[in-house]
Length: 138
Ligand code: ZN
Image 1 (cartoon, rainbow, N blue to C red):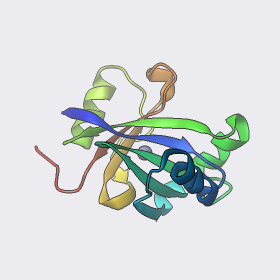
Image 2: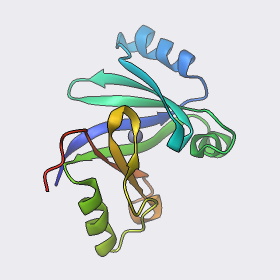
Image 3: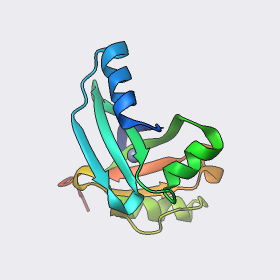
């Protein structure tokens, strides 16, 4: 079951520059910086109330974020919805006719399980489903 917006992903060319903006402009603190090899990105999480911004910097030229930056520049990349059953909700989305990027959950940052839906199926917005560690309900 989907519960809330877990985070909003923003593609940046420099994580250091973006973290400075977040601190100087908004007075927000970055909590975790982590490399996610499966997605070829380095991420920084910035808590905002009970949701977060996820700043994404590519770590390789064939990273999906490299392609995004090359074609569109820095900007909003995806919205992540939190669920207690990422595998089940991916299945439901597919049954409802959505095109999936990930048919099976994969490793996300901070021990999460994640799966992406194709933006063509969801009003042009890349949507991520994310399950926090220990949240699995079924
Ligand atoms: Zn994300």
